[in-house]
Image 1 (cartoon, rainbow, N blue to C red):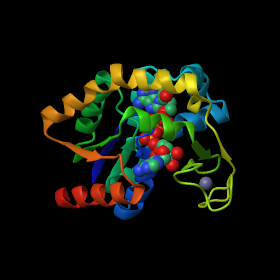
Image 2: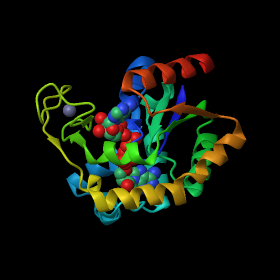
Image 3: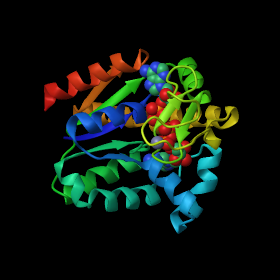
Length: 216
Ligand code: ADP
Ligand code: ADP
Ligand code: ZN
């Protein structure tokens, strides 16, 4: 199964991706996680991306297109994949079409997790992320069993620099302006699945899995 997980920052893409990746046994490819790894390691890509990420701006399309192309060429994606956080602009969506053509593949579905702005701000401002494995938690709505420690890997939880108030506002504005138009692009292709993401994590999970089992 070849899936794009779509939605504004804080919609629950990373949270649901963890479940889906286990359920369907396909790799979870989060461009945000890959970029943060590169920033941490100080690679050339990380150094180019950092200033954009800290401000909540999008990293230039070309860098993302190259990153995704080389990731999708890896053999573990042959059984399928779950793209999280890409494409985020119309040029990225067109580039993904080309990449898929070159690899002789096709997208099965774009799952759009829909959540209202007020809920997004609450989710992002209380988010904590594992330094080890990137798993997302929420201090109130999805706390770890032990404070500040990842349930999955024991890693330390931290607050992302872009989950502070100023950057959150900018990211939501960037989403509306640059990313939301991508929804129409996929609607026209007939691959868009809308999910109400403004509910409990377990309810959203059941809905997404049901929807994907229908098309599998
Ligand atoms: P995204 O990857 O789309 O930015 P995350 O999966 O990181 O979103 O979730 C953002 C924040 O909201 C995290 O703190 C997460 O624990 C929390 N969260 C995710 N899904 C829900 C939900 N259905 N209800 C309440 N909080 C949620
Ligand atoms: P969130 O989970 O809150 O939606 P991500 O972890 O997906 O955020 O992305 C964090 C940051 O990484 C973005 O604000 C942006 O700077 C950069 N980024 C990630 N994916 C892309 C992309 N497809 N295009 C451009 N920038 C990206
Ligand atoms: Zn962890």
